[in-house]
Amino acid sequence: MSGATVPTPVAPSYVLTVNGTEHGVDASWLGESLLHVLRERLGLPGSKAGCEQGECGSCSVLVDGDLVCACLVLAAAAVGTEITTVEGLADERGTFTDVQQAFVDAGAVQCGFCTPGLVVAVHDLLDRVPEPTDLEVREALSGNLCRCTGYGRVVAAVEAAVAVRTSGGAP
Amino acid sequence: MDEVLLPTTVDELVEGRAAHPDALLLAGGTDLMVAVNAGTLPVPGVIALRAVDGLRGWRREGDEVVVGAATTYADLLAPDVADLLPGMAQASRTVGSPQIRSTGTLGGNLGTASPAGDALPVLVALGATVELRSPGGTRSLPVGELLTGPKRTALAPDEVITSARLPVARGPQQYRKVGVRNAMVISVASVALAVDVEARTVGVGLGSVGPVPLPAPDACAFAVDAVDWATGALHDPGAADRFGELAAAACSPIDDHRSTAAYRRHAVRVLAARALATACPPATGAAA
Image: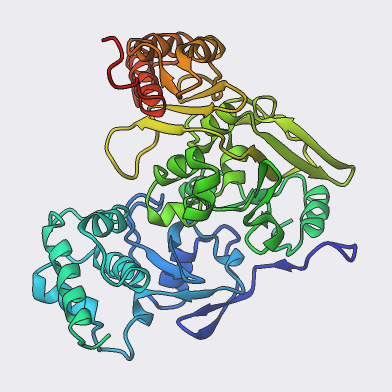
Protein backbone atom coordinates (compact mmCIF):
# COMPACT_ATOMS: atom_id res chain seq x y z
CA MET A 1 0.00 0.00 0.00
CA SER A 2 1.35 3.40 -0.86
CA GLY A 3 0.04 6.90 -1.20
CA ALA A 4 -0.68 9.20 1.70
CA THR A 5 -4.43 9.22 1.21
CA VAL A 6 -4.92 5.45 1.31
CA PRO A 7 -5.93 4.48 4.84
CA THR A 8 -3.93 2.10 6.96
CA PRO A 9 -5.17 -1.48 6.69
CA VAL A 10 -6.43 -3.46 9.65
CA ALA A 11 -6.13 -7.23 10.26
CA PRO A 12 -5.00 -9.84 10.73
CA SER A 13 -4.15 -8.30 14.13
CA TYR A 14 -6.37 -5.65 15.65
CA VAL A 15 -7.88 -4.44 18.91
CA LEU A 16 -11.56 -4.45 19.86
CA THR A 17 -13.08 -2.62 22.80
CA VAL A 18 -15.66 -4.91 24.38
CA ASN A 19 -17.52 -4.04 27.58
CA GLY A 20 -14.99 -1.30 28.24
CA THR A 21 -11.94 -3.55 27.93
CA GLU A 22 -9.50 -3.65 25.03
CA HIS A 23 -8.93 -7.10 23.56
CA GLY A 24 -6.21 -7.94 21.07
CA VAL A 25 -7.25 -10.23 18.24
CA ASP A 26 -4.38 -11.97 16.50
CA ALA A 27 -4.09 -14.18 13.46
CA SER A 28 -7.76 -14.11 12.65
CA TRP A 29 -9.23 -14.85 9.24
CA LEU A 30 -10.20 -11.64 7.51
CA GLY A 31 -13.88 -12.51 7.12
CA GLU A 32 -14.56 -13.42 10.74
CA SER A 33 -17.73 -11.98 12.16
CA LEU A 34 -17.80 -10.11 15.43
CA LEU A 35 -19.93 -12.95 16.79
CA HIS A 36 -17.25 -15.51 15.98
CA VAL A 37 -14.50 -13.39 17.50
CA LEU A 38 -16.49 -12.74 20.68
CA ARG A 39 -17.30 -16.39 21.22
CA GLU A 40 -14.25 -18.21 19.92
CA ARG A 41 -11.40 -15.78 20.54
CA LEU A 42 -12.40 -13.52 23.41
CA GLY A 43 -14.15 -16.01 25.68
CA LEU A 44 -17.47 -14.17 25.62
CA PRO A 45 -20.01 -16.86 24.71
CA GLY A 46 -23.09 -14.97 25.90
CA SER A 47 -23.98 -13.92 22.36
CA LYS A 48 -25.39 -17.03 20.74
CA ALA A 49 -24.63 -18.27 17.25
CA GLY A 50 -28.01 -19.11 15.76
CA CYS A 51 -28.76 -18.42 12.14
CA GLU A 52 -25.68 -16.33 11.30
CA GLN A 53 -27.74 -14.40 8.79
CA GLY A 54 -29.36 -11.71 10.88
CA GLU A 55 -32.71 -13.44 11.23
CA CYS A 56 -32.79 -14.76 14.80
CA GLY A 57 -31.31 -11.97 16.91
CA SER A 58 -29.64 -14.37 19.34
CA CYS A 59 -26.31 -12.59 18.83
CA SER A 60 -27.68 -9.08 19.47
CA VAL A 61 -25.08 -6.69 20.87
CA LEU A 62 -24.65 -2.94 21.01
CA VAL A 63 -22.07 -1.30 18.76
CA ASP A 64 -21.64 2.38 19.59
CA GLY A 65 -25.02 2.16 21.27
CA ASP A 66 -26.84 0.71 18.25
CA LEU A 67 -28.55 -2.68 18.56
CA VAL A 68 -27.08 -4.93 15.88
CA CYS A 69 -26.60 -8.60 15.06
CA ALA A 70 -22.98 -9.46 15.84
CA CYS A 71 -23.06 -12.07 13.08
CA LEU A 72 -23.43 -9.31 10.47
CA VAL A 73 -20.59 -7.16 11.79
CA LEU A 74 -17.17 -7.79 10.31
CA ALA A 75 -14.96 -7.98 13.40
CA ALA A 76 -11.96 -6.33 11.80
CA ALA A 77 -14.15 -3.40 10.74
CA ALA A 78 -15.40 -2.85 14.30
CA VAL A 79 -12.06 -1.40 15.36
CA GLY A 80 -12.61 1.88 17.14
CA THR A 81 -16.17 1.12 18.26
CA GLU A 82 -17.55 0.51 21.75
CA ILE A 83 -19.05 -2.98 21.84
CA THR A 84 -21.38 -4.06 24.63
CA THR A 85 -22.40 -7.71 24.97
CA VAL A 86 -24.81 -9.33 27.40
CA GLU A 87 -21.81 -9.97 29.65
CA GLY A 88 -21.28 -6.22 29.90
CA LEU A 89 -24.79 -5.35 31.04
CA ALA A 90 -24.40 -6.54 34.63
CA ASP A 91 -22.32 -4.52 37.02
CA GLU A 92 -20.20 -7.46 37.93
CA ARG A 93 -20.03 -11.13 37.13
CA GLY A 94 -22.83 -13.08 38.69
CA THR A 95 -25.14 -10.12 39.23
CA PHE A 96 -28.35 -10.00 37.28
CA THR A 97 -29.62 -6.82 35.74
CA ASP A 98 -33.18 -5.85 36.53
CA VAL A 99 -34.22 -7.08 33.09
CA GLN A 100 -32.53 -10.43 33.60
CA GLN A 101 -34.23 -10.80 36.98
CA ALA A 102 -37.57 -9.93 35.42
CA PHE A 103 -37.03 -12.63 32.78
CA VAL A 104 -36.39 -15.20 35.51
CA ASP A 105 -39.33 -14.08 37.63
CA ALA A 106 -41.74 -14.07 34.69
CA GLY A 107 -40.70 -17.49 33.40
CA ALA A 108 -39.46 -15.89 30.19
CA VAL A 109 -36.41 -18.18 30.13
CA GLN A 110 -36.93 -21.69 28.87
CA CYS A 111 -34.15 -23.31 26.86
CA GLY A 112 -32.32 -20.00 27.21
CA PHE A 113 -30.70 -19.88 23.80
CA CYS A 114 -32.43 -16.69 22.70
CA THR A 115 -32.35 -15.08 26.13
CA PRO A 116 -29.07 -13.14 25.93
CA GLY A 117 -30.13 -11.51 22.67
CA LEU A 118 -33.56 -10.70 24.07
CA VAL A 119 -32.03 -9.20 27.21
CA VAL A 120 -29.76 -6.94 25.16
CA ALA A 121 -32.70 -5.89 22.97
CA VAL A 122 -34.88 -5.12 26.01
CA HIS A 123 -32.14 -3.05 27.65
CA ASP A 124 -31.77 -1.14 24.40
CA LEU A 125 -35.53 -0.51 24.27
CA LEU A 126 -35.89 0.60 27.88
CA ASP A 127 -32.86 2.88 27.65
CA ARG A 128 -34.48 4.68 24.72
CA VAL A 129 -38.15 4.36 25.72
CA PRO A 130 -38.60 4.07 29.50
CA GLU A 131 -42.33 3.39 29.30
CA PRO A 132 -42.97 1.63 25.98
CA THR A 133 -46.40 0.80 24.65
CA ASP A 134 -47.28 -2.81 23.94
CA LEU A 135 -46.73 -2.16 20.23
CA GLU A 136 -43.32 -0.64 20.91
CA VAL A 137 -42.36 -3.68 23.00
CA ARG A 138 -43.46 -6.10 20.32
CA GLU A 139 -41.71 -4.13 17.58
CA ALA A 140 -38.51 -3.99 19.65
CA LEU A 141 -38.63 -7.77 20.10
CA SER A 142 -39.47 -8.50 16.47
CA GLY A 143 -35.87 -9.30 15.57
CA ASN A 144 -35.44 -11.93 18.29
CA LEU A 145 -36.77 -15.40 17.59
CA CYS A 146 -37.73 -17.76 20.41
CA ARG A 147 -39.03 -21.31 19.93
CA CYS A 148 -40.08 -21.91 23.57
CA THR A 149 -41.78 -19.04 25.32
CA GLY A 150 -44.34 -17.95 22.78
CA TYR A 151 -43.30 -14.39 23.68
CA GLY A 152 -46.13 -13.87 26.16
CA ARG A 153 -43.84 -14.29 29.14
CA VAL A 154 -41.15 -12.19 27.49
CA VAL A 155 -43.61 -9.34 27.08
CA ALA A 156 -44.69 -9.87 30.69
CA ALA A 157 -41.05 -9.65 31.78
CA VAL A 158 -40.63 -6.34 29.98
CA GLU A 159 -43.78 -5.00 31.61
CA ALA A 160 -42.50 -6.12 35.02
CA ALA A 161 -39.13 -4.47 34.46
CA VAL A 162 -40.86 -1.24 33.45
CA ALA A 163 -43.07 -1.41 36.53
CA VAL A 164 -40.06 -1.80 38.82
CA ARG A 165 -38.19 1.06 37.19
CA THR A 166 -41.14 3.45 37.16
CA SER A 167 -41.93 2.70 40.80
CA GLY A 168 -38.47 3.87 41.74
CA GLY A 169 -36.78 0.49 41.86
CA ALA A 170 -33.19 -0.08 40.91
CA PRO A 171 -32.52 1.20 37.38
CA MET B 1 -5.16 -7.38 -0.32
CA ASP B 2 -5.75 -9.54 2.75
CA GLU B 3 -6.79 -6.76 5.03
CA VAL B 4 -9.54 -4.32 5.92
CA LEU B 5 -9.42 -0.69 4.92
CA LEU B 6 -11.24 1.69 7.24
CA PRO B 7 -11.24 4.99 5.40
CA THR B 8 -12.47 7.98 7.40
CA THR B 9 -13.10 10.43 4.54
CA VAL B 10 -14.76 10.13 1.15
CA ASP B 11 -11.44 10.99 -0.51
CA GLU B 12 -9.74 8.13 1.30
CA LEU B 13 -12.58 5.82 0.32
CA VAL B 14 -12.30 6.77 -3.36
CA GLU B 15 -8.52 6.31 -3.35
CA GLY B 16 -8.84 2.99 -1.54
CA ARG B 17 -11.47 1.75 -3.98
CA ALA B 18 -9.35 2.70 -6.99
CA ALA B 19 -6.33 0.92 -5.48
CA HIS B 20 -8.35 -2.23 -4.65
CA PRO B 21 -11.15 -2.72 -7.19
CA ASP B 22 -11.48 -6.39 -6.20
CA ALA B 23 -12.00 -5.77 -2.48
CA LEU B 24 -15.47 -6.20 -1.02
CA LEU B 25 -17.17 -2.90 -0.28
CA LEU B 26 -18.78 -3.34 3.13
CA ALA B 27 -21.62 -1.02 4.09
CA GLY B 28 -24.07 -2.32 6.71
CA GLY B 29 -23.17 -5.94 6.06
CA THR B 30 -26.74 -7.20 6.21
CA ASP B 31 -26.39 -8.84 2.80
CA LEU B 32 -22.65 -9.19 2.43
CA MET B 33 -21.90 -10.83 5.78
CA VAL B 34 -24.57 -13.46 5.20
CA ALA B 35 -22.60 -14.67 2.20
CA VAL B 36 -19.28 -14.36 4.04
CA ASN B 37 -20.62 -16.39 6.99
CA ALA B 38 -21.93 -19.03 4.63
CA GLY B 39 -18.52 -19.31 3.02
CA THR B 40 -19.94 -18.65 -0.42
CA LEU B 41 -18.10 -15.38 -0.97
CA PRO B 42 -14.33 -15.13 -1.22
CA VAL B 43 -12.91 -12.32 0.89
CA PRO B 44 -9.92 -10.96 -1.00
CA GLY B 45 -9.98 -7.78 1.06
CA VAL B 46 -12.53 -5.42 2.50
CA ILE B 47 -13.14 -1.70 2.35
CA ALA B 48 -15.50 -0.83 5.19
CA LEU B 49 -17.60 2.33 5.04
CA ARG B 50 -18.40 2.47 8.74
CA ALA B 51 -15.88 5.16 9.65
CA VAL B 52 -16.60 7.47 6.70
CA ASP B 53 -18.59 10.05 8.63
CA GLY B 54 -19.15 12.10 5.48
CA LEU B 55 -21.30 9.32 4.01
CA ARG B 56 -23.75 9.16 6.91
CA GLY B 57 -26.72 11.39 7.44
CA TRP B 58 -28.82 13.65 5.27
CA ARG B 59 -29.15 17.32 4.52
CA ARG B 60 -31.74 19.45 2.82
CA GLU B 61 -30.66 21.39 -0.26
CA GLY B 62 -33.55 23.54 -1.47
CA ASP B 63 -36.31 21.25 -2.67
CA GLU B 64 -34.16 18.14 -2.35
CA VAL B 65 -32.81 15.89 0.38
CA VAL B 66 -29.31 14.50 -0.11
CA VAL B 67 -28.97 11.19 1.72
CA GLY B 68 -25.45 9.85 2.32
CA ALA B 69 -24.83 6.30 1.15
CA ALA B 70 -24.01 5.04 4.67
CA THR B 71 -27.22 6.41 6.17
CA THR B 72 -29.12 3.63 7.91
CA TYR B 73 -32.80 2.76 7.74
CA ALA B 74 -33.04 3.72 11.42
CA ASP B 75 -31.77 7.18 10.46
CA LEU B 76 -34.31 7.40 7.62
CA LEU B 77 -37.38 6.66 9.72
CA ALA B 78 -36.59 9.34 12.31
CA PRO B 79 -39.37 11.95 12.50
CA ASP B 80 -37.37 14.88 11.12
CA VAL B 81 -36.53 13.18 7.83
CA ALA B 82 -39.85 11.32 7.73
CA ASP B 83 -41.57 14.69 7.32
CA LEU B 84 -39.52 15.36 4.18
CA LEU B 85 -39.43 11.81 2.78
CA PRO B 86 -42.50 10.03 4.15
CA GLY B 87 -42.42 7.23 1.57
CA MET B 88 -38.80 6.46 2.39
CA ALA B 89 -39.58 6.48 6.10
CA GLN B 90 -42.44 4.02 5.58
CA ALA B 91 -40.25 1.75 3.47
CA SER B 92 -37.42 1.92 6.01
CA ARG B 93 -39.74 0.83 8.80
CA THR B 94 -40.62 -2.34 6.90
CA VAL B 95 -36.99 -3.42 6.61
CA GLY B 96 -36.01 -6.40 8.74
CA SER B 97 -35.84 -5.90 12.49
CA PRO B 98 -34.52 -3.07 14.66
CA GLN B 99 -31.15 -4.83 14.48
CA ILE B 100 -31.20 -4.78 10.67
CA ARG B 101 -32.55 -1.23 10.45
CA SER B 102 -29.76 0.09 12.63
CA THR B 103 -27.17 -1.50 10.34
CA GLY B 104 -28.48 -1.64 6.77
CA THR B 105 -27.89 1.42 4.60
CA LEU B 106 -29.41 3.14 1.60
CA GLY B 107 -26.14 2.87 -0.32
CA GLY B 108 -25.92 -0.83 0.49
CA ASN B 109 -29.43 -1.32 -0.86
CA LEU B 110 -28.40 0.41 -4.09
CA GLY B 111 -25.09 -1.41 -4.42
CA THR B 112 -26.62 -4.82 -3.76
CA ALA B 113 -29.30 -4.03 -6.36
CA SER B 114 -31.69 -6.73 -5.20
CA PRO B 115 -35.08 -6.56 -6.92
CA ALA B 116 -36.51 -6.80 -3.38
CA GLY B 117 -34.55 -3.85 -1.97
CA ASP B 118 -37.15 -1.88 -0.02
CA ALA B 119 -35.69 1.58 -0.61
CA LEU B 120 -35.44 1.12 -4.35
CA PRO B 121 -39.12 1.41 -5.42
CA VAL B 122 -39.30 4.64 -3.42
CA LEU B 123 -36.33 6.05 -5.31
CA VAL B 124 -37.97 5.07 -8.60
CA ALA B 125 -41.30 6.63 -7.61
CA LEU B 126 -39.53 9.86 -6.64
CA GLY B 127 -37.33 10.00 -9.74
CA ALA B 128 -34.26 10.09 -7.50
CA THR B 129 -30.71 10.38 -8.75
CA VAL B 130 -27.65 8.63 -7.35
CA GLU B 131 -24.28 10.33 -7.05
CA LEU B 132 -21.11 8.37 -7.79
CA ARG B 133 -17.47 9.22 -7.13
CA SER B 134 -14.27 7.94 -8.66
CA PRO B 135 -10.76 9.37 -8.90
CA GLY B 136 -11.90 10.85 -12.22
CA GLY B 137 -14.66 12.88 -10.61
CA THR B 138 -18.35 12.68 -9.85
CA ARG B 139 -21.40 11.80 -11.88
CA SER B 140 -25.11 11.43 -11.27
CA LEU B 141 -27.37 8.73 -12.64
CA PRO B 142 -31.14 8.35 -12.40
CA VAL B 143 -31.75 5.36 -10.18
CA GLY B 144 -33.25 3.49 -13.12
CA GLU B 145 -29.96 3.79 -15.01
CA LEU B 146 -27.82 2.72 -12.06
CA LEU B 147 -29.79 -0.49 -11.50
CA THR B 148 -29.28 -2.64 -14.59
CA GLY B 149 -30.44 -6.06 -13.39
CA PRO B 150 -30.66 -8.37 -10.40
CA LYS B 151 -27.50 -7.66 -8.36
CA ARG B 152 -26.10 -5.65 -11.26
CA THR B 153 -25.37 -1.94 -11.46
CA ALA B 154 -23.77 0.50 -13.86
CA LEU B 155 -21.09 1.22 -11.26
CA ALA B 156 -17.56 1.28 -12.70
CA PRO B 157 -14.92 -0.77 -10.87
CA ASP B 158 -13.34 2.35 -9.42
CA GLU B 159 -16.62 4.05 -8.47
CA VAL B 160 -18.43 4.27 -5.16
CA ILE B 161 -21.97 5.38 -4.41
CA THR B 162 -21.78 8.49 -2.25
CA SER B 163 -25.38 9.71 -1.96
CA ALA B 164 -28.88 9.74 -3.34
CA ARG B 165 -30.77 12.92 -4.12
CA LEU B 166 -34.53 12.84 -3.51
CA PRO B 167 -37.14 15.56 -3.91
CA VAL B 168 -38.84 16.80 -0.76
CA ALA B 169 -42.39 15.47 -0.61
CA ARG B 170 -45.01 17.79 -2.07
CA GLY B 171 -47.99 15.58 -1.40
CA PRO B 172 -48.95 12.22 0.06
CA GLN B 173 -46.64 9.22 -0.28
CA GLN B 174 -47.20 5.54 0.39
CA TYR B 175 -45.09 2.41 0.64
CA ARG B 176 -46.79 -0.94 0.90
CA LYS B 177 -45.45 -4.44 0.69
CA VAL B 178 -46.47 -8.04 1.04
CA GLY B 179 -44.27 -10.61 2.74
CA VAL B 180 -44.85 -13.92 4.42
CA ARG B 181 -45.23 -12.35 7.84
CA ASN B 182 -45.29 -8.94 9.48
CA ALA B 183 -41.70 -8.57 10.69
CA MET B 184 -38.25 -9.60 9.48
CA VAL B 185 -39.67 -10.06 6.07
CA ILE B 186 -38.28 -9.70 2.59
CA SER B 187 -40.67 -8.26 0.07
CA VAL B 188 -42.71 -10.60 -2.13
CA ALA B 189 -44.16 -7.54 -3.87
CA SER B 190 -44.08 -3.86 -3.03
CA VAL B 191 -45.47 -0.57 -4.30
CA ALA B 192 -44.17 2.94 -3.70
CA LEU B 193 -46.40 5.89 -4.60
CA ALA B 194 -45.51 9.58 -4.59
CA VAL B 195 -48.13 12.23 -5.35
CA ASP B 196 -46.83 15.73 -6.14
CA VAL B 197 -49.73 18.13 -5.73
CA GLU B 198 -47.74 21.13 -6.97
CA ALA B 199 -46.43 19.59 -10.17
CA ARG B 200 -49.61 17.52 -10.47
CA THR B 201 -47.71 14.32 -11.10
CA VAL B 202 -47.86 10.81 -9.69
CA GLY B 203 -44.82 8.54 -9.41
CA VAL B 204 -44.85 4.78 -8.91
CA GLY B 205 -42.14 2.21 -8.20
CA LEU B 206 -42.79 -1.54 -8.07
CA GLY B 207 -40.50 -3.91 -6.15
CA SER B 208 -39.85 -7.67 -6.38
CA VAL B 209 -41.88 -7.94 -9.57
CA GLY B 210 -39.12 -7.53 -12.14
CA PRO B 211 -35.36 -7.74 -12.49
CA VAL B 212 -35.11 -4.16 -11.22
CA PRO B 213 -37.63 -1.88 -9.49
CA LEU B 214 -40.06 -0.91 -12.20
CA PRO B 215 -41.83 2.32 -13.05
CA ALA B 216 -45.48 2.19 -14.13
CA PRO B 217 -45.93 5.08 -16.56
CA ASP B 218 -49.41 4.12 -17.76
CA ALA B 219 -50.68 3.88 -14.19
CA CYS B 220 -49.10 7.25 -13.39
CA ALA B 221 -50.67 8.94 -16.41
CA PHE B 222 -54.06 7.48 -15.51
CA ALA B 223 -53.72 8.70 -11.91
CA VAL B 224 -52.94 12.24 -13.00
CA ASP B 225 -56.35 12.36 -14.72
CA ALA B 226 -58.09 10.51 -11.90
CA VAL B 227 -57.13 12.99 -9.21
CA ASP B 228 -59.12 16.18 -8.65
CA TRP B 229 -56.10 18.39 -8.11
CA ALA B 230 -58.15 21.12 -6.47
CA THR B 231 -58.97 18.80 -3.58
CA GLY B 232 -56.39 16.03 -3.87
CA ALA B 233 -59.17 13.45 -3.98
CA LEU B 234 -60.05 10.90 -6.61
CA HIS B 235 -62.94 11.92 -8.89
CA ASP B 236 -64.25 8.38 -8.85
CA PRO B 237 -63.71 5.75 -6.14
CA GLY B 238 -63.38 3.11 -8.85
CA ALA B 239 -60.29 4.82 -10.18
CA ALA B 240 -58.11 3.21 -7.53
CA ASP B 241 -58.94 -0.25 -8.83
CA ARG B 242 -58.20 0.76 -12.40
CA PHE B 243 -54.91 2.25 -11.20
CA GLY B 244 -54.07 -1.08 -9.57
CA GLU B 245 -54.77 -2.94 -12.81
CA LEU B 246 -52.46 -0.64 -14.75
CA ALA B 247 -49.73 -1.01 -12.14
CA ALA B 248 -50.07 -4.79 -12.31
CA ALA B 249 -49.79 -4.60 -16.09
CA ALA B 250 -46.39 -2.95 -15.69
CA CYS B 251 -44.99 -5.94 -13.76
CA SER B 252 -42.83 -8.71 -15.14
CA PRO B 253 -42.67 -11.03 -12.12
CA ILE B 254 -41.20 -14.52 -11.94
CA ASP B 255 -42.11 -17.69 -10.08
CA ASP B 256 -39.54 -18.42 -7.40
CA HIS B 257 -39.20 -19.90 -3.93
CA ARG B 258 -40.96 -16.92 -2.35
CA SER B 259 -44.04 -16.59 -4.54
CA THR B 260 -45.65 -17.26 -7.86
CA ALA B 261 -45.64 -14.65 -10.57
CA ALA B 262 -49.44 -14.67 -10.59
CA TYR B 263 -49.64 -13.89 -6.90
CA ARG B 264 -47.09 -11.13 -7.22
CA ARG B 265 -49.07 -9.49 -10.01
CA HIS B 266 -52.26 -9.79 -7.97
CA ALA B 267 -50.53 -8.32 -4.93
CA VAL B 268 -49.31 -5.32 -6.90
CA ARG B 269 -52.84 -4.68 -8.14
CA VAL B 270 -54.22 -4.69 -4.61
CA LEU B 271 -51.33 -2.75 -3.02
CA ALA B 272 -51.34 -0.07 -5.70
CA ALA B 273 -55.10 0.42 -5.46
CA ARG B 274 -54.93 0.73 -1.68
CA ALA B 275 -51.97 3.10 -1.89
CA LEU B 276 -53.78 5.48 -4.24
CA ALA B 277 -57.06 5.26 -2.33
CA THR B 278 -55.20 6.13 0.87
CA ALA B 279 -53.12 8.92 -0.64
CA CYS B 280 -56.04 10.47 -2.51
CA PRO B 281 -59.16 9.34 -0.68
CA PRO B 282 -62.36 9.90 -2.65
CA ALA B 283 -64.25 12.88 -1.29
CA THR B 284 -67.12 11.94 1.00
CA GLY B 285 -70.36 12.19 -0.86
CA ALA B 286 -68.71 11.35 -4.17
CA ALA B 287 -70.78 9.24 -6.51
CA ALA B 288 -70.40 5.62 -5.50
